[in-house]
Length: 124
Length: 109
Image (cartoon, rainbow over the protein chains, first blue to last red):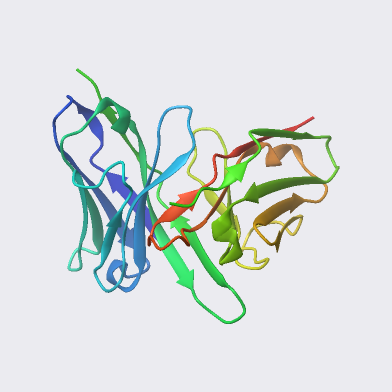
């Protein structure tokens, strides 16, 4: 069964650090694009970061320089290292498997597998 | 970076047809994908590409696109379709980023 399970969330003080993990089963993380998406309380979905199968990484402007996405191929696990946390980083964090297809018939980008999420609360 | 715009809320009578729209420049380059999210749950992909449904998604869900606007249509809405719906695509402005619409709250009356 294809599955993603996030762990590592919790209550952290402003300025602190936290590392989220996303364990995959049923497919290989390193062969896919993988994203982190977050959702602040009562708000919509916000893309945070992506790592391509080739290893390239990209970040939303709101987290660039503070968050780092990575993966451990031996553990088939995706990570999000979050530093210098702010109150506005409070959210449920989801990991997702991305699919991008560039074709003559049209391009598309979608996230077909999602974890259940892990909650990060930044508060003193 | 690109933005995707959705109406905040839409309602539909039980069994009727409803269309949820998403507008943005990136949709001229990428088809939108659509996600359903119920309270306390993770998003679920319902439509991707030109008009593709993942396994297990009812055929009352369909997608279409024209210019910079994508639409999700639910034909014969059911009570269990009440949820938030988000569109998403890849940024086409040169950034290799991903964008989400603000979401549409669908109420089934």
